[in-house]
Image 1 (cartoon, rainbow, N blue to C red):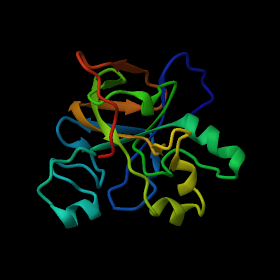
Image 2 (cartoon, helix red, strand yellow; image 1 turned 180 degrees about the vertical axis):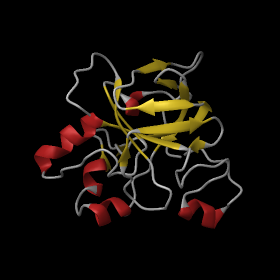
Image 3 (cartoon, helix red, strand yellow; image 1 turned 60 degrees about the horizontal axis):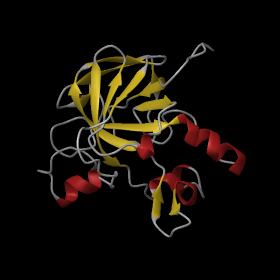
Length: 186
């Protein structure tokens, strides 16, 4: 980004990769396609694209078309010696000002002018995080004071309305109506 100041929730960076690698390079913009994901990203598709999940059942619906991470996580990790930049955790969209982990299942995130992503669940951090940065896994996957598992690796979602998303775009949160279910790993 060019040092612009943003008020309110916004996109910090967008990333995509056409190959299955852990980190994704930051790009100027991504194109979200309804029911598909990020155009040109290896994880796009109507059925599951993550290698471990394909091995178990390639016909599963893809609930992980878009991966979002809050930049506040990077701020939290910095003093622990883990210097994480947008795209390094494999996310497509890095946000600031949105409590992604606190959202209920089914929340719709309006990204930029047109794109909409329905949040399906939490990313379940895996060993690849330690392969990227030794010791990082224990910082993003641990136990809360009450003993529950705490997953900080971002959220996953499906594209329900397409559009172009760029750094600096606003993020608007639309909570689901009715009973709100906490996010679970997907």
